[in-house]
Length: 261
Image 1 (spheres, rainbow, N blue to C red):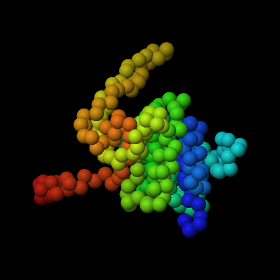
Image 2 (cartoon, rainbow, N blue to C red):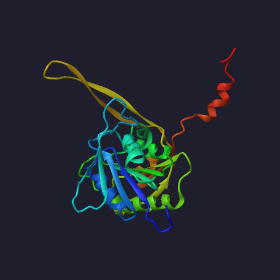
Image 3 (cartoon, rainbow, N blue to C red):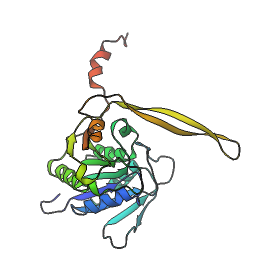
Image 4 (tube, rainbow, N blue to C red):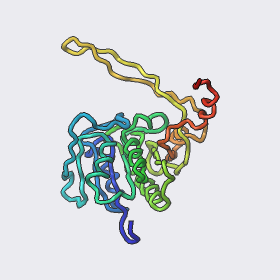
């Protein structure tokens, strides 16, 4: 980025290009830099880091709001696809930052591994692009995103100013609270939690059985330095995550195994 040049901001999500969360994020980002939107043409929640390999991938320039002057592309693929095609085919240069969201629903704790929102951010990170995933703990299409505004802007500007360590992206979650009740930002770790899942077996009108996934979220982490704890106590959680999945501490232990003759 040249000294007096506005930052180029790639905006994407997993809820689809017309979702209220991404529309709010676009509005904030336009106050910071030049925005290009490349997002799925339909909801892609829970897709994780899936990519399109065995189907055609379409990416069409569209107009969502005639009063907008930035470019928007609707992609037939996954959130990770959106970032890949943005860098390789659409953008004239590498973006200065990629922001994903604002997701309708939590991506804290274990949810991060299922999240299309965060996978878009991780994909950007693997390409050397500073990236942030934003999520609001409200699944409703009528969710109020206004309380997130100042925090989204501040976090984005700080990443643009300071950069991020290589291999790290930010996972940011917002509590479902009015603006005046949010206490501030906490840098924290991912809580140790899991889903206790259940498949609800049903039968369709043609007599064929099918299954509907349900479950309960269990947080067994009693720490006060976690995303779950801070969200429950009125803070915005910021968790730095890495896409190097190596369990480095285990390497020495495995070296003591009798794996070679």
